[in-house]
Image (cartoon, rainbow, N blue to C red; front, side, top):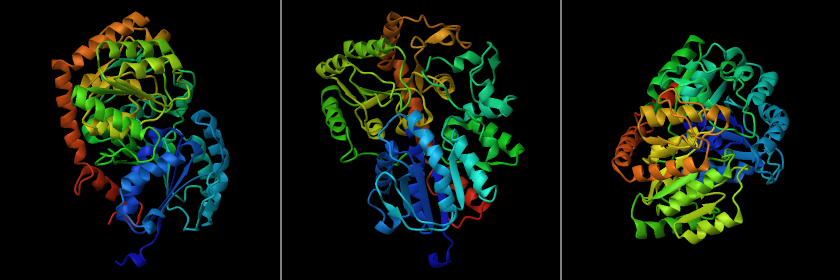
Length: 492
């Protein structure tokens, strides 16, 4: 069929303003547009993430597409703000979304409130892809177009946690019960058995909305991969099937190659220079990256200070990213890091570039799903420091089942965080001294036989994940199934 006669498929995406929720879709959108001349993708984002999304899309294009193709990805913001706090900007997204969606559903042109860029009219959206935790956007969508347009939930969290939240007896009122613990044993397909309080190992300065939008949607896109969570994915698919909903596993959504730092992006040049310097002095796989994403940060700064002191004492080169609005890195600590000669600290770093650099050997992570998939996709073993949401389950899965990570226990805080783990009986002592002892033990283990074992395991998983987006890979197969299900004229 000639592309001129093909119907335009217009996909609208929006999400809670967490970078780990948005970055995978940028990659997905770029792939759709590169491979299908009749696809238009609109991303409605908050101002603080707009430029980063545009960079990510350009990186995925990698100079391989025409200007006309680039114009078929329209990323814009519906309001102005200079805040980087996701909990500040999300309400404005919710407030402005209905008017934007109304215009798009009527095939009207739109413009970006932040940049002034204007986008020509295109046919109304054929399908909406909305973030798992963006419940208000789903409500607004249904109020405007009812069920005439399919809505696909965008699940960037670990599938095992989706099972825990949505396939339990509490699914009718997840928010009411989320965070309530009584010490019962939780059994989830694909996870080691855990006490319910183990899913809350840290005190955090905000509440997490876990509105159950999965059951309100027509299907689900899962950005995980079979090599990472096969048992949980199969169980989740079965549960959705019982509800007459489909599940499409399209992960991992990471670039096939990420060998260049982003030109012009803040932090890129210094990261590149630092890594090249370290590899000359310390060799390959010598650097550890510490990053907790764009939202989370430890309540007790002393624990971070102790980890840094341990890294410096052990001569373990490191990069620290503190993008969270709750992070507080003192000038004194920054000076100490800079004077160490083996450390780099920044509010933003090109994470995928760093993970794929030959100098990088380890990743201290909060275990947010996007970070985990980037770590697995880069073949980098992890050191887990989970906070809440899907992260504690991921840490247990990575360290116990997949055996690709160490999990830090002494960094746990709060009443629930100091209770014993079911799988070992171990309890955090709740002191900086204990954190210091543990991180030094883990550093030694990273350099020993256990570290080699974890690295070998993660490299095997990486090889399996690499196949998912190849010609006959599982993710491409599932994307074709999605297109056939909804009669979308793409995926040719």
